[in-house]
Every structure is written in C-alpha cells, then in structure tokens.
Image 1 (cartoon, rainbow, N blue to C red):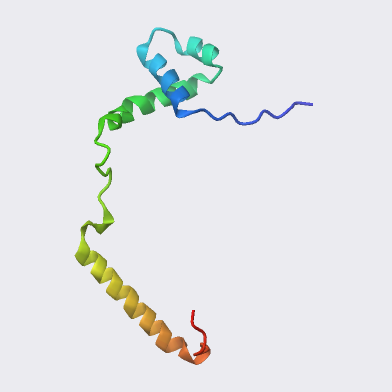
Image 2 (cartoon, helix red, strand yellow):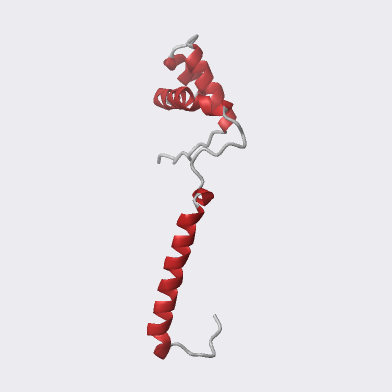
Length: 104
C-alpha cells in the first residue's frame, strides 16, 4: 500500500533562498532540486517570480499598489444614491409582506 504524502508548505524565506540560488546560477536546476528536495519546475517558477516581482521589494511601504477606490468621492456619492434608491424601491414594493414591527 502506498502511503499518501502530505502536501509540503514552504515559507517565503525558503522560497526566496531557493530562487536566489537559482538566479546565482552556481548550481544547475538538477543540483538545486536534489539539494532542496523539490521539483526543478518549482524552482523555475520561484525564480521567475523573483525576477518579475523582485522590484516590488523596493517600493515605498506607504504607497498603494493599486488605485484606491475612495479616491473618487463623486463616484462614491453616485453609488450611495443608487443603493439608497434601490433600497427605497424594494422597501415600498415589499411593504405588504414585511412586518412593520420588525426592526432589522
């Protein structure tokens, strides 16, 4: 009977270490795979991630990566108006089926 091997989880520090070794190029993927006991394809993937996203390490910490949704107050006010109208419409149309003493 073959025992089922549980899925291994790697820390970000370990992934960084392996990817950095791969970027250095001092050892082949096969050697790194044997040394760290992981698949060569996994090492290639981590290396690719490091090379593509490595610059994000040097971004300012306070700087948002994506535009903030709260940056446009007019759009937020329009959305509030739409939601209020929808609520009022539903409240009016469903009032015969709603208990007036229910304070949800």
